Image (cartoon, rainbow, N blue to C red; front, side, top):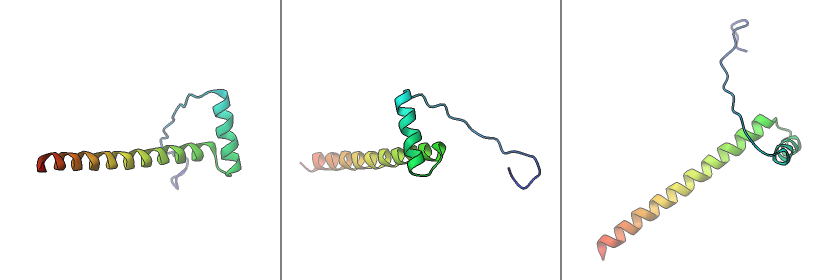
Length: 73
């Protein structure tokens, strides 16, 4: 809720499909970390995005270095 009476902000929902075992593991881990399932999942997603960006940057840098070494040879 915002400070504007009963007006609610629009919300976005994500449907995440996983096995019952995975769902229970997520719930248990979130509980141990004293977080909501939503908070746990968004944290995991953001961590994955960060890792993927770092890997992409390293791969891009490697491609640039390989391209540069092939020109100097």
